[in-house]
Length: 479
Ligand code: NDP
Image (cartoon, rainbow, N blue to C red):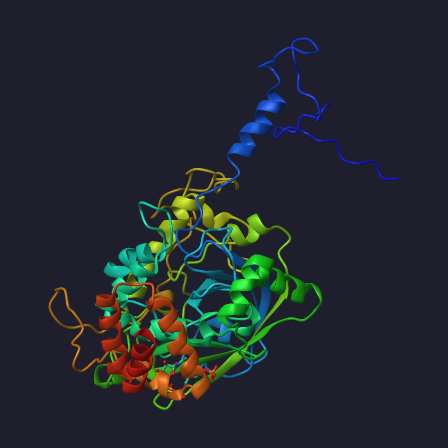
């Protein structure tokens, strides 16, 4: 029989006894010199790192993106360079509001974060399972998230906070409609769509810019849970979605998504009826149809949850040549906020962790030192630039074309008349089946019953502006 490995201390010193601590006499107190005991307890005390303020509870899996459609006229990103091309990726799928141990089957938006290990660096597509968001300006984001978290006094969640905020921020109505629709509680990660949500840029080989939106549509079909099924599952198996994804992949049932894009030529943006950079709006498919790009498949479970899922760090700032940003105010803020969160959570060298480091691109720069610099810290290489010693240099081929902007620096509220907050929520309501509409109305009413009448009235007014019958339906149930 193969001899088992000997336990060691963190310094590699073999341990003779892992069951009894060193004491002064058989019944005496423990000796301070039992450094193995001290190290074991001290390490245990430090096992937790700060959990994410949002998207703390998640499941993750490895997979492959295979390109099936030619979009090289829009982007020079190598990941899309030819049909049949395969790129390794990792996905992390989360609820938003709950803590790391919270239940999976709750009514909440889901994070849909993808890291593609491309040959020109990692591209992170940090999306959600909905195409829009509650606010279009990041200055409102911390306030909004506070409403989804816990009341300062009681540490309880509060539907009053949700509706108080939403009733005063009409731009949130579109996302609120999706949240309270059947899709607000997916039956599992494989059964929901993913969206990049923001507009991004594509830049082609001629350095022409296009605006783009990313869509990942489930090939398992949309499946949802009723509120009753979801509530009872919280009691039976709070980790239902995490378990379901893991077990499906173990059985070889690999979930797949069809990846498509919507593309808007740069010059159309100023003329388009909607602000295309408003995260509370979609680009209707009739204006910008979906263009097929590829298929994403999740086919390998993590070996270690903490190393791969918890330490995975995604940032919308990670775009590769041929993909770039848009002026979406929420995207602009996320470019800062995500990397900032990871520096706080994991430390300044988080991109060097195995799950985050590029697999097919080389990292060469002049960043050195910092907490937990656990690689060779670039050895004896020169640590400044310019230098005369063969250090890495910039390559202008990776510059992107100038972004056209105009106007005065100021704080602009979006003009409501033109960029109406109610038309798209109304369109969503009107495309639902009568059963979906009924469910939406019931879901709204059962939550709104818990809030003061003045807030109910404001919400009914918003619903009515989206669609008269929706407002009437909710009002009737609140009588
Ligand atoms: P389309 O009829 O072309 O598209 C409707 C879209 O709505 C489909 O992608 C469909 O997804 C999706 N959908 C259906 N039911 C729900 C639901 N309960 N919650 C969320 N999405 C749902 O119409 P438009 O493009 O003109 O959009 C009309 C409305 O559809 C929008 O105002 C928006 O609310 C919603 N929508 C639009 C998207 C877009 O990018 N244009 C994306 C997603 C939603 P599926 O095909 O998977 O059933």
